[in-house]
Length: 126
Image (cartoon, rainbow, N blue to C red; front, side, top):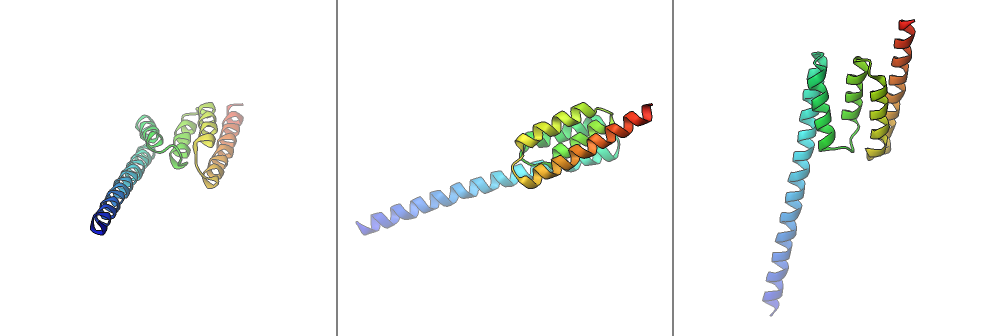
C-alpha cells in the first residue's frame, strides 16, 4: 500500500516537473523571438528601411505586448517619417499594455521626445 502511494507521488512529481519544463521552454522561445524581431527591426532602422523595421517591431509587439522596447522603436520609425500622431497613438496604446512601471516610464519619456520632435518639425516648416 505504501509502495503504491510513493509511486503515485513520484508520478505526480514527474508530471509537475515536465509541465514546468514545457512552460520554461515556451517562455524562452517567446523571449528569443521577441529579441530576434527587435534586433532585426533595429538593423532595418539603421539602414533606413522603415517598412521592414515597422514589420519587425509590430511582430515583436505581437510576441510580447507587455515589453516597451518594440513600442519605443516603432514610434521612432513613425517619427522619422513625420508620422507624429501615429507615434503618439501607439505610445498611448502601449501605456495600457505594458506590464511594469519601469516600462511605462520609458514610454512616457519617449512620448515627451515625440512631442519635442513634432514641435521642432513644425517650427522648421514655418
